[in-house]
Image (cartoon, rainbow, N blue to C red; front, side):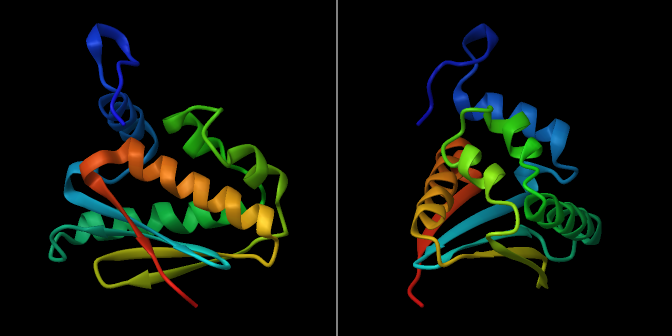
Length: 148
């Protein structure tokens, strides 16, 4: 949902894109984010729109590897810097260090982080976090729901 947030009538999505450029080393306009909610957590995938752009692919992979390591420690400072400290799910994810299995994997043209937990409250926090990401990133992100 785009609402005025930043200065000069900046929309929420414009604000997030501006802040994202300060945290994410790849270009938002040249990548696509997918957030797939699952009953056990979810899958976050970021890929370069042009798989031949090796620099963007490398930047996506490096960033997602670092994010997976940070999340495993309960460090959610990057999404907080982009989306705000009150982003849905962040408090729960920060407190969940060691209680969510987090795994990074290279995929064609990018990378993927899988978040897996048996804790229903943490699954809910992940799903809320995914939904907020999709809303904030607008055309650069999409949501999927999968089974299994």
